[in-house]
Image (cartoon, rainbow, N blue to C red):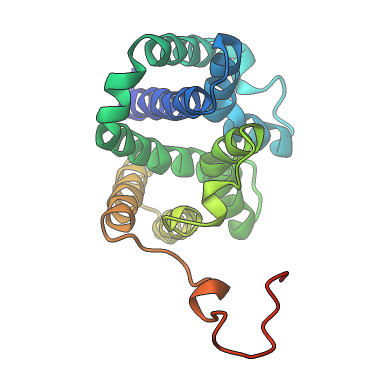
Length: 215
């Protein structure tokens, strides 16, 4: 059992926890908790496989990801108060998983002989799509679209992976370096509250007498 596989499982578990806790915040029942945990953990990888034409998709041959999602759902249901208090630990596991998911997406894209740009897009898709589906099902604007430097971190990680790959560095080293880069950048973004520029940061109601609040 490789270290990358273990980190992949850890990241999937952290993603599933985030989905389950979102469902609890939204007062969903146990079925809703399981659904949000499941789609958060496997949504990105499933879409990646569909885009590559890799069918059946990975979860149908790797049921451990289903079991992980169910376990995260049960854990969240029983111990949600404690889990809400240790949110920082979940964020750390999430950041680790994010780095690994980016690497898996990019490497699968390169193995399929798609372009470097396409491989970076696959890395981004693998990492963020599960969270986007989670937020949409919970009637939220996807967090990746509005905060925490999330998508940019994944794109930067994909570019780092490609840069190292082009130098013929062994894949294990590439994965460790890229996942570490994404992990550190993600934690820095959370710690220092890095965000991309928004229109609201450039304009206020006082900037123009013709300001229209409907826009």
